[in-house]
Length: 161
Image 1: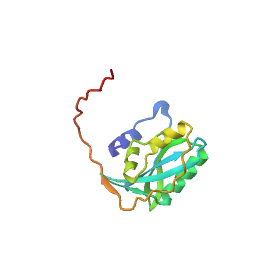
Image 2 (image 1 turned 180 degrees about the vertical axis):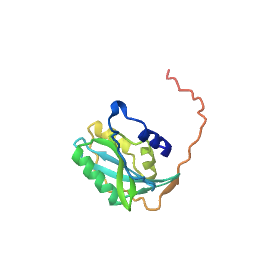
Image 3 (image 1 turned 90 degrees about the horizontal axis):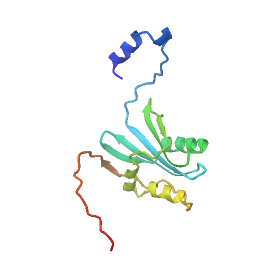
Image 4 (image 1 turned 30 degrees about the vertical axis):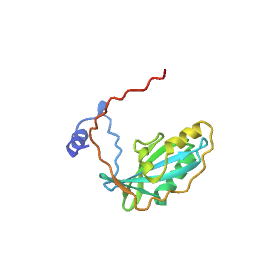
């Protein structure tokens, strides 16, 4: 929200004359870390890896300051299959800003470090065994996210005779 919007909301009387209930948190302007997790049906984390986001500059992290809280959260809540927890830092410490009980939109980016958690989740759902994996070797992997309109060419689907 913009400052003038907040000021106007505070100046206006609340519905029914009751005081406003506000949730206020510090502004967290640091880079975001988005941690993807694959857990088995019982909520035991199998693979946990973080994706760093600083503007368009991206990378991966296996920093336990981010991964361990996700493991504990997933295990305690019993979240199964794919989930995602997002962090920013405040005063040098990771702060959870979002918990998604679904796959993150950027999950495909893990392919750059050799992971295909979407396929592993399908295999789990089909009853196949997926082994717990240690953190991938992500040292030095950096990339840039470029978005834009891409033409989609029509493609003919072959017809079997």
